[in-house]
Length: 496
Ligand code: 6LW
Image 1 (cartoon, rainbow, N blue to C red):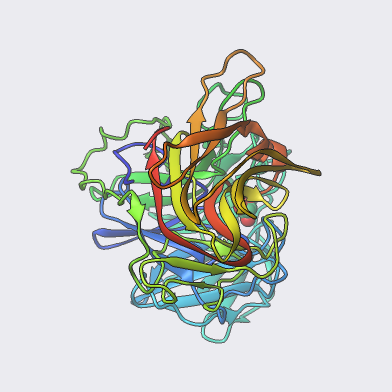
Image 2: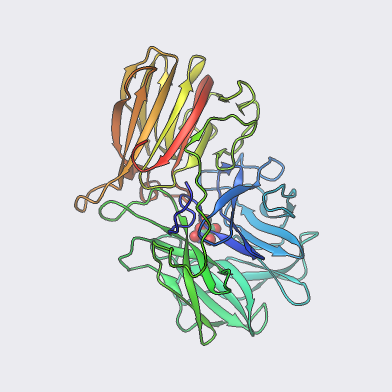
């Protein structure tokens, strides 16, 4: 499912991008909130085609989420390469606060975390001056010099900028030494439709900073554009040393006010420098005009048949993934899920899913429910999800929207192993009241035709309805006993 030279460069819920260049290679990391493993990391050679190479926080000694609410857990990371090592700093807002991990290979393994209690805020950034001193800048915007080996502060924190007058939530700071200046770039306005990117510059890493008179350098607030909420950006130089901006945005669909269902995704836009200030070019969908040769898109296989002993890196679970509950070793070629007595309404349901990355897509899974109950779900959080599940000799479509939970449709199934399907179809707005898409569930028994059981309005699985920082995840789950899956298909477009 590689990108074909188009924005978003990393589709699906991949917010708060941080990107760094090492020679001819690029690496990008994103927030991951309550999902385990956390902080997906990607590789590219052309800034357009990205392949996930792992997850930075992939073991419990790095990532504890037992107390994380939905959209809690891991907030914005900063990924940098300094002194021959990759360094990633981020915040576990639910347990432990700011942490730093390092690696020689960005695909991992990453170190156990150095906890950073001295870092006074979220969205931590790392930058080094000519003497090798590390400056950590956080939302607010405050700054402290750090000893990264010990995690200790080398002085008192200080506020260095409060963003543009009248704009709320100065956050997502990144500090760069470019030419004669130190540049401090931030997001402000909040991560919704008022989101923006602003920048200031000064003579030293700690300022004093002079705001760009042309701020904000990027915003789509009040603008009719298919990409909204643009903000939380990181600057990087392309293979030809031109400048580019990776940032988050949303793609609302349907009628008024527009509902975005994929969460905040990562986009790319060009940057030119004028009078010592960056000017961000238009955010366009077609990136084929980018001024350097593009790699061939990495075609992700449609089917995962769980043949390996470990799950591929794009699979995510809720808060943890104990081997005794989630394994491909129990029955080779099958994913085995052992329930811990929770439904999709609980925050510890045994769940293995992948981000929905396309506005129209089709997913299906072959389930063996002879020893338990479970199914296939489209999840935003524990209060907003649709699923088709095998329960007690029948298949049910269940919808949870806020306080409401209902069985929408059901039919008996005779087989113990059968295919569950979900088809998500983007809807062109039919007037101001149309939803962004429809979500249709079906079932196919061995040798039988697939039958659609129910079609639901997708607006209720959108951030505008549910709130939060994530996006839809399509996955398999177990609620009772042991449930096994022989394969999982995901394909863009509304049909297989
Ligand atoms: C993140 C903040 C933001 O910490 O949303 O869009 C928060 N920006 O910078 C969670 O993603």
